[in-house]
Amino acid sequence: MSRGALIVGGALALAVGAWVFSFRHLDKKWQSQPLPASKQAAPRPAKARSLPAPLPSGKSAAEAWAELLKNGAPKLSVAQLNDYADACGRDAQSLIVAARLSGDVAFLQEAALLYPENPLVQLEVALCPSASTEDRRAALEAFKAVSPDNALGDYLSAHLSFSEGNYGEAASGLLASLDHGTLADFSEQIMAGTEQAYLSAGQDPLTAQLAAMAGLTRPTLAPLREVSRHLDGLKDEFIKAEDYDAAHPTVIVGLDLGQKIQSQAPYLIDQLVGMSIERTFLEQLDPLTTTGANGQTAGERLAELEAKKADIQTTSVAFSELSMKMDEATSKEYFVRMRRDGELSAMKWVLAR
Image (cartoon, rainbow, N blue to C red; front, side, top):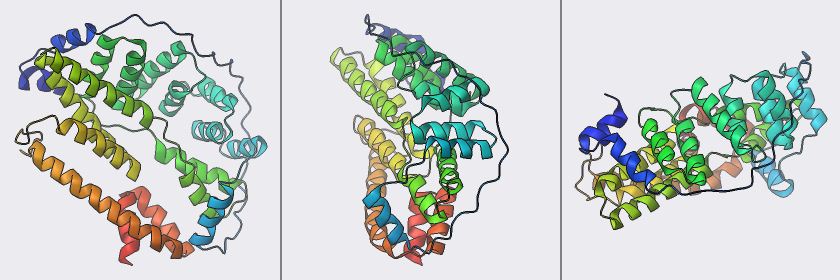
């Protein structure tokens, strides 16, 4: 039996169909003007080029950060981004990075044309504000087909269904997410490609690393937050209607969403957003309710999350003071450890030096 059926069906003595049925009672007609359709992509020839050697830095982390804070991340021209993409063989990653750094949808259109089975490309199309609703939905279905174990596709499908008022479809997507143990938005891949783009334009390694980190956008976090808010609001509606058979699974799905966000990436923003979502739904449960496979109760998990939040806050404050004194070698090792072990662990490594 699937995890979704087990949790919502067996553990809660509720058939999956009943939960979906409760959601469908909330379906409403929805009308909206479609977003402008994207232009037809035209492929560009790939050129094999070697990346120019990066300039020597000679900067401290404090100097590099101060420069970024004063002037912002260096702006790369479309010509520079085309050179970077050419040097990378105009692969999917380089085209998506170029699209993000330039805001030029032509890079995304080229990627969509050349790499229709690449999950990063389909995810980017699904998140594109200028894409039509139909194109976003098609991209999400393609994303789920090429990345079937990634729960992100289920959540984004549910988000789109919620926005259309199709609560029954949203419920189906959320139930599917319970059977998918991973959630990945490819942020590490984007960050690595962005760093390479800055290096290809002649930026020194430290500035390239800092600019890539400072400029990393997380377009999936807002939809995930909205899904959690929809779930929390629907839970309240179910309780008001005394439909507890629907309210309880809604809490379970919300807990799972928060936990998956915490496990998806090494960055503190993921930890804090996921912890906030999980806390919202834990607070709906009796503190003695068992919520984990290890027998942990809701009250114990809340205490654990509070301790983790305090640890993050303390570590972040101490790191913000010490980071301004890091030399380039320490900064380089910090980024290696952040990507390998997570941002919090890397901060603690710096503090322990």
